[in-house]
Length: 142
Image (cartoon, rainbow, N blue to C red):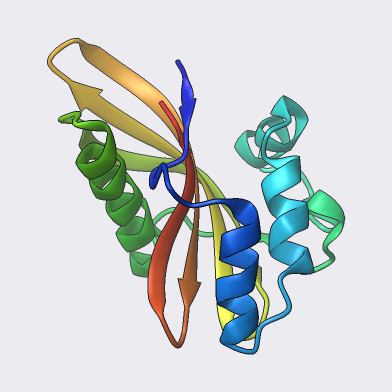
């Protein structure tokens, strides 16, 4: 499985600048993006471990995988990845999710079960829901 940023033209510095324009300091998002590249972070999310302080941010919490907002964010992430990567993955379910509510931004780290004609997969995604500008997929690993 190869890691891919959904929008190949987006750079973390550009995202930081975009969020700063919207009045949001994104040091927390930067910390989350660095941490999700480490398997230890995903292992904690998958085990539903105590997420307090995950990625160095005290507001991390386990999100309910049946919550409509979590499911919508997961579906959005799969759809965006399909759009950018030219794949035909089908969303099956959310396996686990950690979320950070950072005021006008909620960050989701999602473990998503997907499927295509070749098999079933467990994908990883990081997406944000920004009150002012909507949803953005930051990172996806299939």
